[in-house]
Amino acid sequence: MDIQDNGVGIALGLVIGKPLGITIAAVGAVAVGVCRLPSDLGWRHIVGVGMLGGIGFTMSIFITNLAFGGNEPLIAASKMAIMLASATAGILGYLWLRLLGGPEPAVEQPSAERADLAA
Image 1 (cartoon, helix red, strand yellow):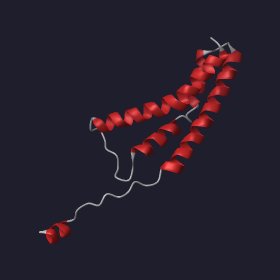
Image 2: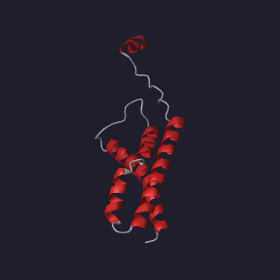
Image 3: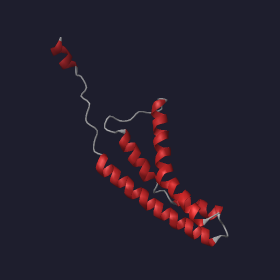
Image 4: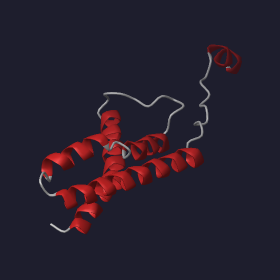
């Protein structure tokens, strides 16, 4: 296994795989009726939180130590890739939510009083 290939796999997993998995899981949960999005939350918020999910490096480092035990250069390179990918995911998630994460426009609910006036 090439150290560089391992680092690319880690980066792709944390920066692309985590957001994709979190978003797909949320879409699936809403689609089957397990839950629903609150009125002030949109799918762009779910994507942003998914990006922030790439920060989760603790388990990645734990798995690296188990998977590559005895290969110290590969462990060191993997830990560096994990830290860089986690930082990248955090920055991208922050920017996404900062730029696109404003509140959803409120959907006006018809009230009983308005229904009486219309009749």
